[in-house]
Length: 301
Image 1 (cartoon, rainbow, N blue to C red):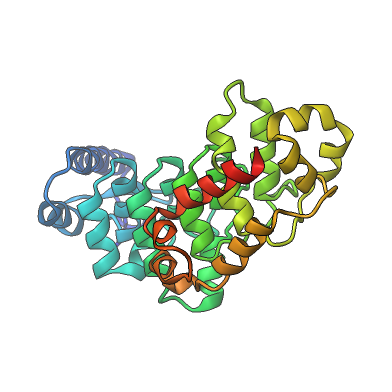
Image 2: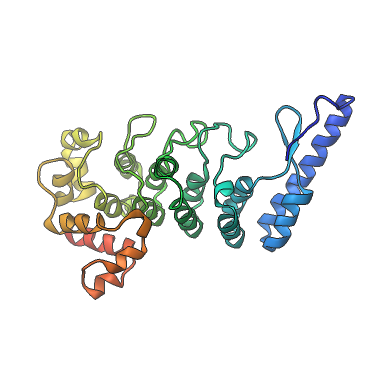
């Protein structure tokens, strides 16, 4: 609950005193989450003892959304699990301006990708299953803050930072690989751009199979650039993958078959539905990411 101090505060000195108290209690809560203190203790602090200062002269207690951001930063998985199970809507709501300057949609998915918090990302995506479809889609394909995330969606960030596990989770739960960022680039454009820039491109190359399995139609901005500099891209991608991405040849039949199978798994049933696919027990036992990478290495080299 916010406490508005501006109307009743008798002077600047009292407001400065409140600011100092808020700063002290905020840092105590930050330390408590960082030190992985028990969930009950953190919740007691959050709801009864801790305040942070907001614009306009207000001292507010931490919301579940703001607490979840701290849990993501410090990888406090039990606290993240508690917040998402007890108050999923409040935990995934928009935090205050003191936490996020662009008041559009909640930044939690992007934060999880940035810090590579795979387990908590999976729990957030499962919580979103129960949201209305348009609201869920808004979370998944949200363009981030232009100051922090450069207008990228969580999927773009996963490609930019080479987070293959996060990438697979986002795609499987319904993130669209065709949504463009504020510069008109799709996730594949972002991934190819990083692949071209990195001196050690293998981490980004490992993201390609998962992304391409969820792209039955190749629709991205850099296709012409691949054809214009065929020598560079053939060396980076290998001949078969270059031929496919540049539009000079169709995808391998195995990849087409895998794309068709993946589309039978509804986002609400991911990743559990992977184990129900009509494929051999050897493939079914593999992690999805490894399955995708194995297919890529056998067909893209």
